[in-house]
Image (cartoon, rainbow, N blue to C red; front, side, top):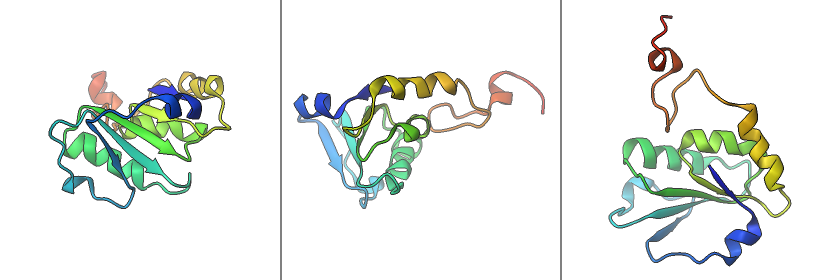
Length: 129
C-alpha cells in the first residue's frame, strides 16, 4: 500500500479519470468505465462504510484501478484498509509516515482470505486443516 501525507495529497492534482465517492453512495451504481482512481472518504475514523465500498469495488465489481482512502485516516486502520482493497492511503495531518509503514512490518500474513488475497492460507500453501 502506498502511503501519502496530507501535505503530499494536497499538492497532488486530481486526474480527470478520478471519481470522488461519498461514503453514502452505493458503488454498484457507479459508472466505472475509464476510471483509473476512486477516492473513498472516511469522514470520521469510526465510520467504516468506505471499507465496504472498497471491498465491493474490488471483489464484486472487479475494479483494478487505484482505490484511495481519504479523510480521517489513522495508522491503526492501514492494514485492514489494504486487506479490503485500498491501494493508497492519505494519512491525517497528525499521523507519522514512518510509524505508519511500521504497521505493515508487524503483520506479514493472515490466515483468512480478503479482498486482495481471496484464498485462505491453507489453500494457498496446500496445508490440510
